[in-house]
Image 1 (tube, rainbow, N blue to C red):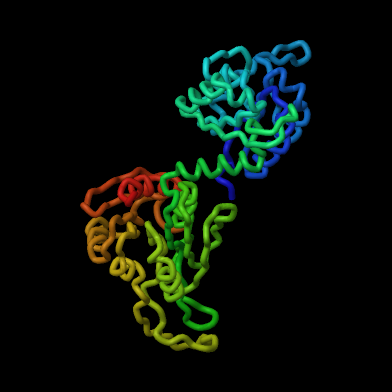
Image 2 (tube, one colour):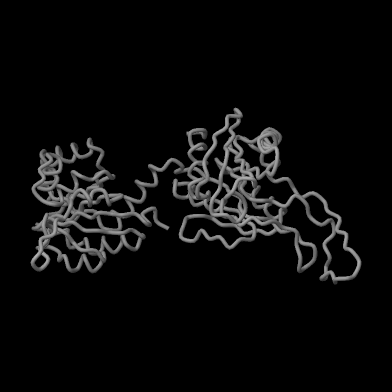
Length: 403
C-alpha cells in the first residue's frame, strides 16, 4: 500500500504543454489511494480540460475565486483548500508560476491557495531549456527550496520547442514515486524493522479442543499499523484472530501455538530494532495431546499441564540493540506485578493495563494503559481507542531508540 493512501492531495496545474500529462498523474495518485482535488490557473484550461480532470478526480475543478452556479456566485475559499490538503503538488510549474510563488504574487486562485497551504508542497518545473537555465528561474527554485518546498527535478529530453535538453517535466510515474520516497524517508521509523506479536495462542488438548484465552489481537494489530505508518518494515506474528492488516506493508505470519510463535519470533528477532510482545501467550499446555477426540464420560477429566516457552523472557535474554516492550494485563497488585515483569524479563518498557479498568482488556476497542520505562518512571494515559494507544506507545519508544 502506498504511503499516499488516504491522503488529501491538492494538484495545482499551470499553463504549460506538460499539463496534458496531469490526467495520467491524477489517475496514478488516485490509484495510490489518495483523494485528489485540482486547482488550475485560468490559462491551464487551454492545455487540459477541467471536465477530464473532474471526471478522473471525482471532484470539481477550480480555477477562479468565484464560480457562478445559475443565478448564484459561489466563493472558492483558498484557505479551506489549503487546510484540506495533506500535500500540495504543482505540476507542471511554469517559470511564470514559480516566480509568482517565490514573490507571493497572489493574482490567481492557485497562488492564493499555495500561500494558504500548511502542508508540504512539491513543485515539478516544466519549461524550455533556456527558461529552465535562466538565473531568474534558478533564483525562484532556490527561494522555494528555502521556504521548505521540495522541487522535483526536471528531466532532459525532447521539448515542445523541438529542442533537446533539461526542462521537461518529470513523468507522472516518476513524480508519484519521488513523493512516496520523500515522505517515507521523512518518517521517524524509516529504515527500522519492527517485530510485533499479537493475539492469543491455542494449545491443543486433542484434535478438536484447545486451551486459549480471550485475546482478540486488536492491540497488536493497531501497533503494527502504527509502525507501518511511521515508515517501519513490520513483521507481525499473530495467533488466531479475525483482525486484518490488508493494504499495509506488513509481513504477517500466522501461528497457532506458543511453540510456533517462539520459532517465528526468533527467525526475525536478531534483525529488528524494536520488538513489542503484545500477544497473550498461553502459559501452559497439555503435557500429552490426545491423538483422537476425547469422548465425554461421567467421570471427571484430569489434564496435566506443563509450561509453554516463555517467549518474552527469551527475547529479554537474547536482547542486544533491540528496544523491547512487553505487556502486563493484571487483575491485582498491578504496579508491583508489572515492575517485577519489567525487571525479570529485561524489558526497556512495559505496558500495564488492568481488567479492573472499565473499557480495558480483551476484545475491547479501547484501552487504558500505564507505560513504565526502564527507569521505572510511570506514564499514565486516559481511556482511549487502541489506535490512539498505539500512538502513545510509539511516542515513548521513538525518542529512546538508536538513530
